[in-house]
Image 1 (cartoon, rainbow over the protein chains, first blue to last red):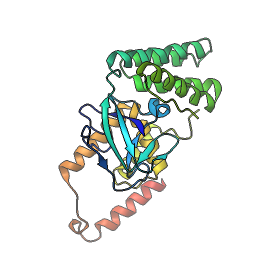
Image 2 (image 1 turned 30 degrees about the horizontal axis):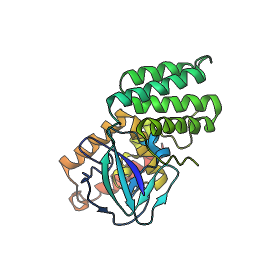
Image 3 (image 1 turned 45 degrees about the horizontal axis):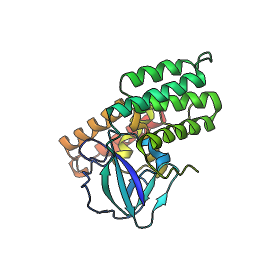
Length: 169
Length: 82
């Protein structure tokens, strides 16, 4: 199964510090979400786990899908998705700001999120701008609004990066 | 309004030791890590904690003077309850 993984510069896993080899299978001791296993994203999970490098990863074995991640017993990095670069990250931030402006820009108080998202995106803090966009949507439409904004972010990423399949349930 | 799954920075700081000791539930660990994605401050705090642990190593229980461990635990219990 092809999935995706955000890493820090140099193929470093953000939480464990593991330096991923490219093209080599990595086996985990077990599959236990957030503890053991190869953790990765399907397209719909991407906006939650944004990071500096985006890689395509092949997962093998019994893959467990959680609401916000995939966990597998083994995986290997296949290729870096070069389209996820500074320019696209900036564009992604701007798209989040634009949707937020359209969604809540006319509403008293909540419209402050437009300023927040805009400022954060301008500072390059795009993951936080995306989160602010989702929070604004939640203020506007409840928890479903949060999920819908995250879905739109995933759609945007899938289209711009040519990722698929888009498996939003 | 705050999402049920969303952690505030203060909560992340309170949980950082449990995170490093791998004693959080999978759900809390996920919420913790999700917070780190967008919070530079907590990322830095976690990195500083890791650096501190790496620099100082561990204090084996036997290194504590007699009675000190119990007094410390009592103090921590009182702190948690206050």
